[in-house]
Length: 309
Image (tube, rainbow, N blue to C red; front, top):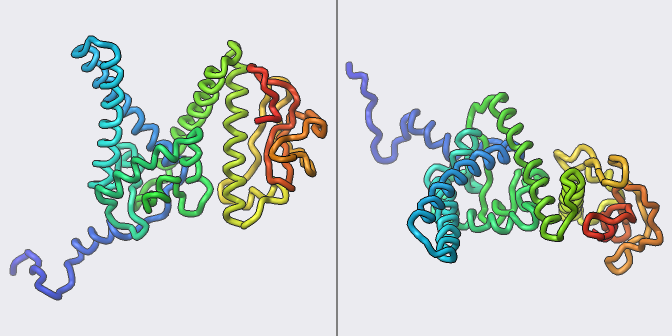
């Protein structure tokens, strides 16, 4: 008797191996966690950095004129980044980072993303990047773990079957380091553009405080979108999944603290009334306006009052 399984004819069910392969692609798994996705992004960043460095070396060797060099390197950056994310996502659902993490991009129905949707998703990265990548951070605060670019493209990122807890932990750890470094870098860059102080430790603290403030405001906006109203207190933000505690605020002129000062009517016409502040160095919240700010009357390295951010 032959060991070869009979082929299926019209109207017949697919053989179990074929059916299993189809279900592996079509059936969406659980949503991939934010930190694991950040770890995958870190790996992709390293891959692209290596490719861009190689391209830049070739341009420098081939082109002598400085302006043309810059334009070609910028063009290479767009083509390499766009080609990498679009092609791999369209045909496999996975970049190299996502392969390492055991996650895949799928449509909302769990299907293949395709070239057009993949290209649109990559283009929407520019929206998620502004300001300071808060569109990517959005993936930490909604049940489907969607970033802004996922909402735009109609995609989601899911785990493949049987991804081990160890693999998730390693990638999540890489993601945490990547996010921390990105926040610090963004803060340093912002201070550098404003002519900030030369003290590196102070610059890191100031940059982290500004970045965390913006992240808190994004979380509050998500709460308002979900509940239809601003939170009565910042403790209510803990109702959101993965937001378990207030982050600590570290300012150069105050002790580190995660406390919140609640002010009634401290924000007038979009501006904080400095006369009402206690200068505690804590987070501050005005339920009447839904505004989160910093309860500090000191100034940063550029001479700007903290409560004005």
